[in-house]
Length: 506
Image 1 (cartoon, one colour):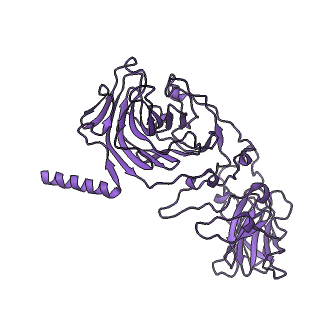
Image 2 (cartoon, rainbow, N blue to C red):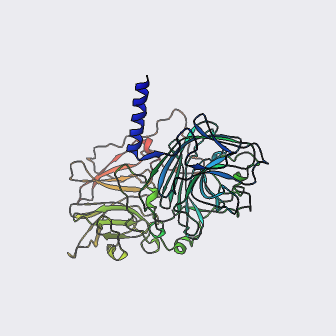
Image 3 (tube, helix red, strand yellow):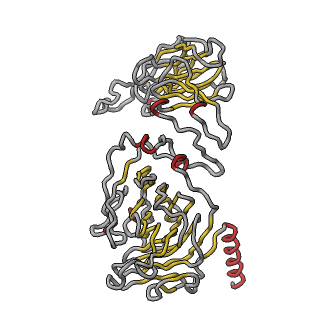
């Protein structure tokens, strides 16, 4: 038995070393840690912090790790708490003017209210920054933008749970039991911190008991600070407004609203600030950048890397909705309400300059799908504004200047809204084209030899029930089409899709 236990311990230590993590707590005493001995001890092999009631502490105190400062790192700790709330302090600094063992800086809060559990709270600073279930960007002026929301992670903090903090440059992530609670990009250079102390909190107020074990730290490579110019605030983000921190109250100020039910009355953290219902029109120009999705918001499979090549200037080049490559590897891009653009793919690690983006002279607009094949550019137009007919077009180079300019309409399709003309694809044999449309594209006339006969309709046990608000009341089966066409012909055959696909969006 002892031999098996020894082998198990050796294997665990080896695995930990291989992962790059090191333990910060020896499980026996508080060697390497500094805190008020009246509050902190080791019980049952766990770091244990206790208070007796509201009169014991005049301010929040901390158990500080004296093994150095943390910069870029990943920290894991198993924690349970009852009676109040606690937290993991990181990249923080001592504040002796407030009293001994006083700390200020980023905190991974551990709180019984779900919106506040594993949120980012800045002790003695900006207060609540981002709550459980939110992704937030702080711009250089200190404005907080709600960039994304997800279901908050709900747990009982009186039970053991593993809390994770990942800090890489100005990008912070918190997790509970491996599930992400917050994602923060902090561009406010004057107030953010890139390195500092690590500590655990004892909160003033009601009597509490916190226990901590399996504290593991992994140092990450230096760097990782993302510049605001190479990032962006999503176009649908909203400003989060919060009141100024209350003086001397620690965590008492209200913060951003969380996408979870409000906690019990009396919890000062839970008072949520209002979110503006509409993003100001001037935000894009004011921040000096366009609103491409930040690279940090894009999740990929392992070993894939995402690079931001170009932020499309919406005022000049519109909203790009489709890309395709030609036979020379150049990329065509289409503006949803405008024309076409072409550019060469930049080398890995390089970006695309505005001067490298060419306007295609072809008189075409509102292209929703593209395919370069048979020496021509085939496009599916879905013109919301109905300035030109929607349908299938061929664009070729009429004057041999290596730039498509001649536009031919192969087949007009009556279409409207997002469920109109979609994509252009090669047929499986590589000799023809498919034009794919949604259920708001009207069935076009097809050749008599079309393999699909017009035998379809509703199959209801009860009378048909159109949408009460009038949406698509005039749309009947079929729902969407695959239209097959020869590359040079204006005749085609259509294949309706099943009525079950009628909700397919563009």
